[in-house]
Amino acid sequence: MKLLTLLYSFYGRIGRGSYWLGVAIILAVCVLLWLSASLTAPSGSAPEIYTQAISLFLFMLLLLVPVWAALGTKRLHDRGKRGWWLLAFYPLPVLLFWFASARQEPIVPLMILSGMLLLWGVIELGFLPGTPGENAYGPNPSTGLTGQDGKTTLPGA
Image (cartoon, rainbow, N blue to C red):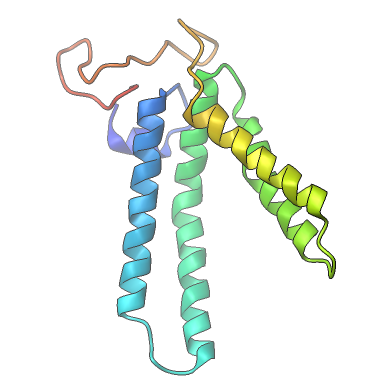
């Protein structure tokens, strides 16, 4: 599996190894963007710094959310589930946490539920094995680093 296919395609299945490789790439890009932003940050007033931080955050969202969604969708396909489950693992917990903490007195049970949904997503996507054999989303991804043609591929490709 090619790197662009791993990061941007919503079709097929990927194993846990390919998923974690994609997550590592996302985290590395985030670190590099934040480092470059901190090295070029203006030393002016707070509004300038806030504007740059918000701009960087929005750029990272536009760049990395589609990658995260593609990785999660293919990982869910490997588990035999539809990609829409991804909404329960990331956007829903973030919205619940935001709603629970935006009040003068935070709604602690809602915050706990948000954390539990996030934890469920991490376990489901990163640690549980895929369905054995072929499923509705394609063949079982191989676990080795070498494909059928003898060429090196990504793990779980």
